[in-house]
Length: 281
Figure 1: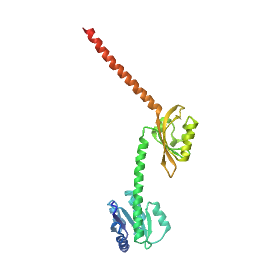
Figure 2: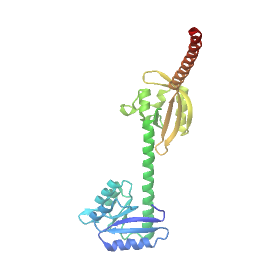
Figure 3: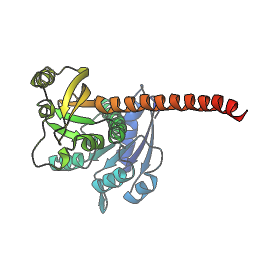
Figure 4: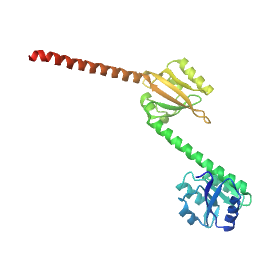
């Protein structure tokens, strides 16, 4: 959508109402509104997938209602902003429309050009924000699920609310399939370390690359590098990333051993070659 051009599909069986809305939008100087009108539910269905930035839908459309059209629009375009219009001030209709996903609800005769323009602008802005949030959420979920390092989400009291497969595999705990909540603080071997993390959560600060000893479900203890950052400010949710230093050190030792064997192999081949020549003579 252009910042200065807004494309609108107006759905109403009363042409006079359409002409009134059109005259309101012509008074707005900050944006250009391109508004197309259809008079029925069936006509609107044929245009849902066209390039519109927002839909203005009358509640009464003959045998169908604007709520039915709202559901059809949301089925095709999840984030499309829809403003419901009605000739009567009915709180029940308002509540149902908002529950079904309407961006706002306006009563005909109770709004002017400024109110209509502001409502349209806010509805489009909110729809864009919701879409951006879902994209970010899906991106995080993809990283969260596929990460090779354990990652968990915890609340301000330290209880685990979500864990990725790497955590379940390494630690043996599956918070999604337990009857009681698992506390991240209970995984620390040393009380002073858990106390420090508890303080970090209480003061809503961050903790980066903190080395600690954590307990697995099988009672084994591993050295870990922990980072705690705020994930959701409103819900007081923290993201905990755990680097398994024990496993990392084992891999490093294996790599060093392979390098040693490789070096030994090269020396052996050189010696065999040097010894072989005199023996052949």
